[in-house]
Image (cartoon, rainbow, N blue to C red):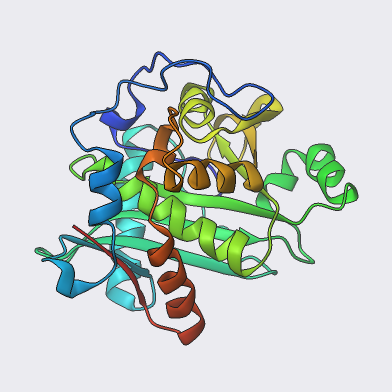
Length: 270
C-alpha cells in the first residue's frame, strides 16, 4: 500500500507558490502556511530534550502492538475517507523504518510514515513505474521510498508532517546514505509536495492498482533537501517551505544516536 500520502486537509489547501527552479531555490513565496511560528522559535522548540519543556508530541518507532494498531487504524480512516483501497505491502527487502507521532497527553497516534530502502526485491514504486525506477538505479543512485503516510486532521500539521519527514530523512540519508527519495501521490497532492518540499515529477499519471486510483511518481534529490535545511541553520534569507520547520542540528545528532542505540523515542516536540 505504497500510495497515498494523505495529509490533513489544512496542510493540503491550495498554495500560491512556484515550484523550485533548477537550482533548487523557490522563486516565489512558498505557501499560505501560518507565519506566527517563526523559524527561530521552531529552532528553539524542536530540541528533543524533555527537560527543555513539557513536550506535547513525540516521534517514535512503531515498535509495539498498540502503536502499530493505532497507525493502521489512522491509515484506514484517512484512505477510506477518500475512497482509496488499503492493501498491505511487503516489508522492504533493503530495510524499513516505520515512524509515528504521538500526542503525549492522550497517547493517540497523530501521524505515521514508513521509509523503505531499495533492496533485492525492489521498491513498490517500481511495480508501476518500472522504467523510471530502473533508470535511477542504473545512474548509480541509492533509492528509498516514502510509503504509508497519513496525518490526523486534528493534528498540528506544522508539527507532525515536518518532524516525521525529517526523522525519516535522517534515517535514510544521514544513516543509510540514500541519495534519492520516491513517493507516489495523487495528482491533487503532487503540487503540495513539489512546492513545499522540492519534489519533481518523475512518472506520468496512471492508474495504481494497489489503491485503485490515479497516481503520479515524484522524486526528490536528498542533497537538495539537505541544502535547504542548511540554509535554515545558516539563517539564509529564503522561503524554504516545510524546511523552515526542520529539526535543528543538535536534534539531528541525537536522533542518529537514538536510532543507533535502538531507542524507540527519537524526538520530542513542544
